[in-house]
Image (cartoon, rainbow, N blue to C red):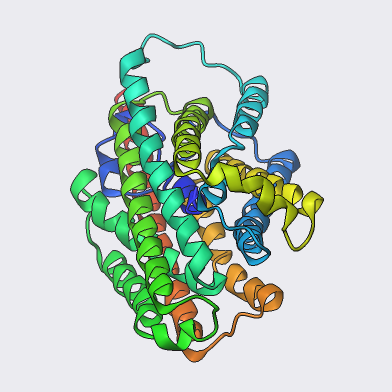
Length: 384
């Protein structure tokens, strides 16, 4: 998702740990871990380590490979969009093995399952939004240097907080306001210095501006999607399990893939794919391998994010994603020779600062929720 896929999955993805405290969670933007207790042993930490590796490696790999496709002769934005989504069957495998390892709850009396029409509507609406975000991010990656693209896309957190203010009653605390300000300035630095950044690319000024607009649009779309998914998980999909989240991600990817396939054939770009593969600078086999690797890496990234959420918490998952933020621009400098000018360096610093401020506010919210939960349990014990 964006990456768009990537940042979707994060926001893509906020769940409450206990239905009794749903209203308290309206003021947070995090997804709590599964209500099923996890034993703190070496196996759990091994799983966490694996998920961390998935997030950090695939976050950078998927974006770099996406740019590599365009850099060596790939021209289809619809194909660049499709490979972000088409690997969704991998998620069903992860869901299957998660069900085997996770003990099933025997208490089903309080569960409320939405109707087929409700679920279908949720998957279709979010799938359409995912397809639009993925297409805009594909256009942005085509026209912009990877470092510029990834830094502008980081502003999704600012948009997430903005939309959550209206959809999820998100409070604008000093840390959230600070994060919004820093992330906005971080992206604005790159937009203002268009001439300096555009001189390092081979695209026209018009296409460069289109790339910036589409990337900002994708960032805003991701923010809207994350806030909408949080609302859906709180109001509609109340059975907060790994299977619920994986179903949401997988089925909306299925819908989005169908939409993108329609766009691929309607635009006529499918007719040029054979010629594109034959003229790919690295050869036919690397062409197929690049596209397959992009598809797999996006889905492995998604598994890593969701896995961290349920093994630990959304705060930890967001923190790992924030740690991976500087990786993409640095790798882009090494692989593609992107110039790391002054504006990009300041943009990275401000973006990291904004991420830390955003995650720290989530940490405070999590601590407040845990204290409230503990106090409630103590009061309950005392009355007994």
